[in-house]
Length: 176
Image (cartoon, rainbow, N blue to C red):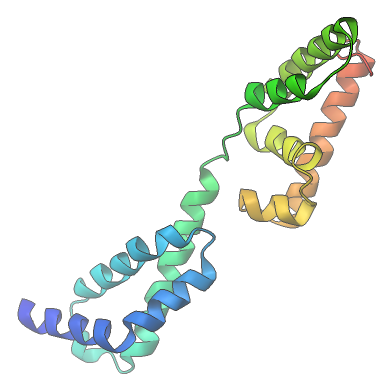
């Protein structure tokens, strides 16, 4: 097959379905900034099709490829842990406190101990606790934010809370 034929095939698809493809991607992605890159990836994959003339329904094929691209993108995103700077979050808490110096020192020590306990946990588990307790996120929202199911987010939260509770019992963490 000639490269010109492939380019014509893809150009025709871009003209006919480009807007719908971008809308399709935008609805299914958390980050709208990813839409142009993923749309380009869809069309690049279509350029690699060897026998475009064998495609009976170009529209269906296009959106099937787009679904595969979204799935692979989601898997890549889920593998990257959400980054939360624990020290920054806790330092903000410290500066918000207007208590007396002794109380501030106790809170600073508690925050330091809590930072240590959270550092012992995997990133998703500690992030879940921070998002829930400090960010006020629901378990469903945490699941969406981390790209995991509700039950996984619930499991992470329970694991983090158990770890902190066990640390308190062992005397590593003091209760307020």
